[in-house]
Image 1 (tube, rainbow, N blue to C red):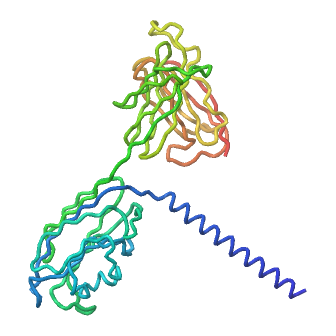
Image 2: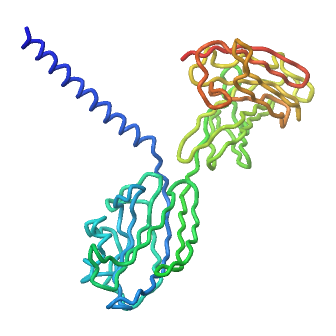
Image 3: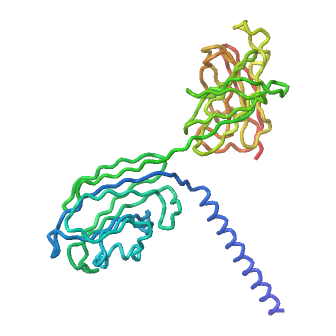
Length: 365
């Protein structure tokens, strides 16, 4: 019996280890997916200055990239052949890896070095966004671990934001300047425009900021937009216009936004309004998001307050109708602080002009 229990215990422990290992692999894959890899170019310039070593002004030197943990990424430039062994710090970091680097013999005098980095490692793989460091080392003597040459490190953030750093002059490093210029890809907004019965509406106008396009015969459209948040307006002859507020566009990604337009009973009647000023939110119940639609006249203010069943406000939307028509807000089911609202029923108190309506929406997690 004891032997059987021991066998079962070993099997359970072994199975647990396999599960933990599998979860670890999954987490690492998820972590990689969530990381951003912004393309771009780093430019760096530095002028080395003699320290009057035995071989001065002749000098050997190197510029290389490391990550936030000072792990080697790529060698950018080496001016040293015979005397590479004197570049002690770089050897310890890179193992003398020069793949993809600019190489030359030692220089007879000091000069301004201008280098670039494309955001890839020595294996030509894109590096994730984050902190990186430019390392500069040069020697004018037979350097050793106990008597190394001169060294400078400059940090910057690789990401979607440009960087422009001018570093103050130092004794042995001058004219230092670093830039990071990201390549920002546009995002794509696309979808379908239909009427209330689902029929496509061709030649409907889609406007986001200063960008505009028309729908095709099948009611479809695509619009290339820079990264940012847009109020997107859809309008067509014979229909009330519809505006969807705060549509987020991400670089290199597609965002789907469909429109369902309400016909105008009398297109020349600027005071006409639909029979329902605040239709039910859709979908309802909601699991990830729901759309709230409210009708306003031109320059008329609107407000939507979302309350829990205890009467506490969890979210607040407000604005002004640019034109007469529908305003649509996409609620991501989060409260004002960005936390997901728990499952339950929520009350929507909506006002447009002097009219107030109440609706409810149910959240299911």
